[in-house]
Length: 332
Length: 278
Image (cartoon, rainbow over all chains, first blue to last red; front, top):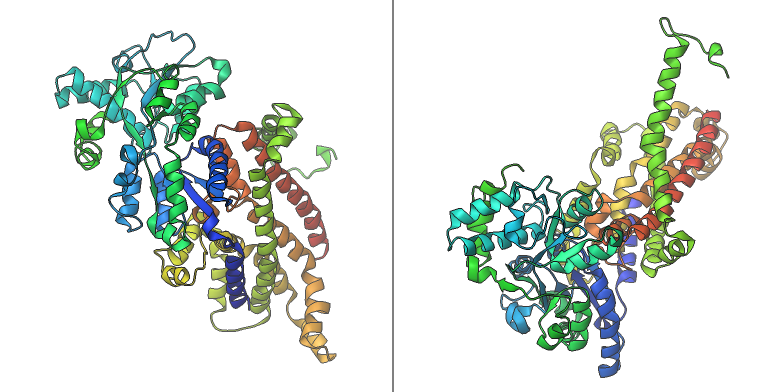
């Protein structure tokens, strides 16, 4: 008796759960730690949308690791737009046929309205005087970052350190690998994610320096204000795109293509960029970037394409089984 | 009661018993009481007002409501299913009866995350029913129906497991007597069967409620984590924790803990009644 009843109730629930005015609602599926940014951004966009079109719009947020979010979208999470911190996870959606391969051309700056870079957080007063990647390889320094096998954040750390090693050794890859290994040998514990590494560093007081996205260092320092943690930006780091895209298949079904596009374009306006910069991201708009030059010191950024020849080459030369990460990451 | 009145097993001294009791109490304090107390300490770390503000945050209020709604849907269905299944198994003989008993208990032995993934592979966009559901604009996973279905799966055995042994022990004599006295099926059920199992039934329902409210792994797979839409209370606790909002996470956790404690108290009371009713 329960099985048909159950199915009917599921259908009734489904109908009840469907938004009544689909064209005025947007689901933004985003990365884990972006909640504050979008909590600040969305009301501003809602006001902007009301002003320019006279319509109200609700924006729902889903946050999680972007690989997992991409998986969920493949399985039917009705995301109109994605705002991710890993380009490779948007490529997963491209392979799934949910949006076109040319998504990077749809918006300025390679569809990355803001970006960040691996940077450092050190103890009060920087007692070990940690200024650059070379300091992380010193024998007297303990370094904290998560496991690069499970954390995209840590993969950027690995790549940034490798890029620095290449520069210091005239492009000698084996020497760069030895340099990165020296840093990895200074890591007492590899947590599975950025949150775990943050706890290890800030709550368990292990290590002299935490390596994570610069965008996170401000929030962590504020959350553990008593500890007096200090942000340090290295001389050179890796450009980490925070790419955005309309999920065409979903948006077309929901009739939200125009709204979704307008939302993503609005993220490039000075108004939006200022909110983002307040959260310690670097932004695409030069004027706004100049306003926040004090809190985001100058840094030379290299890109994945320049140094490593793109993500496919990185996968093959660094992250595949038996590749360079395996040589560096021996103590698991 | 003094230990002297307890029957002593050969070779066991009162001192040994006291050490064992001390160990049990100590471990209970360390592993259960202390973490529970800590939840409330952390939740109120910044005072009542911060606690209230966190609880009354719209996303938290919605998570509490969603979790309640899921329990309101799941528990009655589960009670109906449990009675029907236990009735079928205990009072009737039919081929495949043993298989049915095993099937009912499967959710106990399967990790909830596997249940979640199964529903995803069945009802998801790339799933077997996915294209049909999408063509008819029915959203099952990443919406309330998916959360309800997974919670139903995970909690399915709770009522049946409590009611079944009781029904089996009681046999069918009373029902047969009722038949000879001219009672119809419904009368037999409401006047004879139901009163016999009511405490076990309530006990199962309380366990089911506690589990439905606390379910994390399976729901996490099919939720989609949309704040204010599909975020249940346990998922909300995790999200707040990941956002470095410890007070918010522990405040939300404290409501979950309260529900669990209430369920525990009710369960203990019912347990007494159930045993007395034997």
